[in-house]
Length: 481
Image (tube, rainbow, N blue to C red; front, side, top):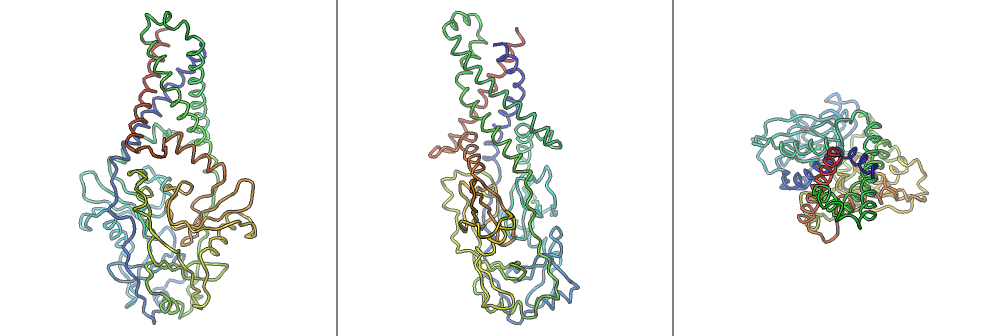
């Protein structure tokens, strides 16, 4: 009993922080802003057959670049050029070759207005974000993005990825405040600067919480015969015992799954998979590279230049992938509605810039990328699948769509999810990762099949608050002794 008291007191602070910040999460998902659109505007590109990208780039003294794409802005088609990945791109009208001043900002504003339903005249501030911060966390994954703020009492602001014409996340002052509360109490962001120390302290606190709950159950069973007489004149002890039994299972669920998630997150954070950069010399482009493209597309809405085994290809996307709402704003809506936000797609296609007959499917490109990330031969690939919707294994947290799931041979069944348009690795998943994702979703967040989201949130809040009460009653008992 003495160790139950001592360790129970030691866990009080952790339980209170985790429980109260946990309560803030469902509140945040109900109060956060929701986009009015989930894909970029679908406007077919119109590229003249005599358009010469090489000539424009040389005229503008752009001798090399990292990204080249075609996008639609204000019903006009522009050549989008990124000389450096973390710098604003430049835009050139394909009709006359004239540069659009502050084109990347204008494109970001148009997309922000589209996703939020706000008029562009309500925009008060735009800022290029190139690093993660307290305002834009690593969980959002995408960089660089434009932060576009609107004239709004709660300072509505959207983070826009102009490279792939998508919304990274949407927020306001209310959500930002609740996010800070959640990260402070749940992730212990006050020691973010020392990740190893953070891991050790949180792991010890969670382990102590598990011991406290298990030892409490043991004491309940062992002393149950004398409880009525022993606690007759001790109401605090009596209620601590009753509530402790009621919430013990929830305590074990929250703490065990939280510990599993903590360890796995730390291990995943140590893995680094830098995205291969595309560095192209303008002189290496042929004059008819874009002419080939113009003759071989009909309804393309997005075109990117990609590299495959040292050869350049146009990656042509004929429709925008519709990400479910959860991909953009976490868990605002019940996932039972996600079928309304899915988009059908056969995936992008690859066309050689010098020879339209040289065409590949995106699987070939993704396999090459995945083999690079895995440092494994392509002969070890078991299967490859185009993913256009978020699901249990590839959830909304990974942001990118469409991606190709490439699975390799091995005891752990390693799966690499590669975004063809950027070559980025969205996530690497092994069996243990899949198990952790399931445990975290079901055991920690209580995402039970068939359970109404509102009812789930109410239950989570009630049990979290009950854990706080049990901890405070236990502390009061200890101080009284």
